[in-house]
Length: 316
Ligand SMILES: *Cc1c(COP(=O)(O)O)cnc(C)c1O
Image 1 (spheres, helix red, strand yellow):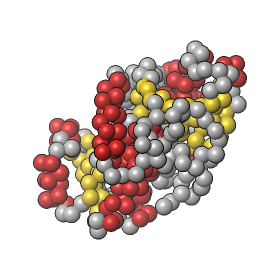
Image 2 (cartoon, rainbow, N blue to C red):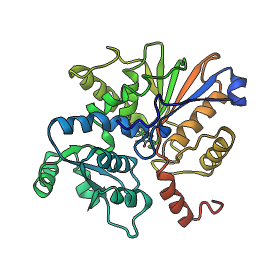
Image 3 (spheres, helix red, strand yellow):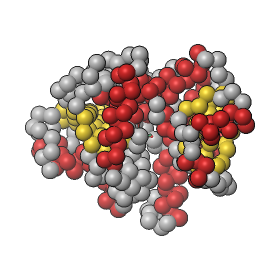
Image 4 (cartoon, rainbow, N blue to C red):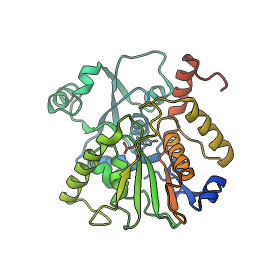
């Protein structure tokens, strides 16, 4: 598929903080893979789209919030690969459309709005049946691409990385990406996940469930046992899609010094957490860190608008 750039670039980060702590940092730039279909969302989509094609579906239906990177990527990938797409969006329609939804609509995605209560039923067979009755034969991809096909795609993220590394760091929403990563590393390589939601510890059970189901399936795994993983739950900065002054300041500074743009919902929080942990001596001397840039930069447009309205940020 649409890897415009292959292999995916790995960018070394020359950081005084890391030098002082004796650790090395590289960033795997999934954000650079393709102009619109990039980041971990492409990896989570690829085997879902393949399954849809093999089962002769012509329409994809999926779910997301109004700023969703997954909605954006599904609209773009569907358009590129010749699928009709339907996005079931949480909440009411707001006009003019925000940049995410306006892009999705331009890609041909049909946007359907449902109230929060209905949205909560998105995983139930009842709602899915209703959607099939309304829209016909649709291939349903869960919110965020969180299923075993999604995990499978994420086992390929580090496949072509040429730089040697010991420790992978990744931001977590559903942790589908983290699950795929743990199956593609050779212990003692390990993964730290940084949940962007509050009280992210609940993800441990989700990760274990995904891994158990994956290993019980006949899907291929590069390694038969998951590499060690752990979660660092202290860098959510107030919760999902919330930001604070420290995070904004960190993100702008990091981008300026290292020329890596970060999104405020996911990657900024993970990078912030990693740099803070490095200063605390969390990683052993000699550790070679691989930070996964999972993309999501499209979301910054909408986030900036929101922050301006709340006058948290005037300086942009
Ligand atoms: C969706 C997303 C994540 C979270 O991925 P999960 O597999 O749900 O944990 C991380 N970073 C970015 C930029 C994303 O868009």
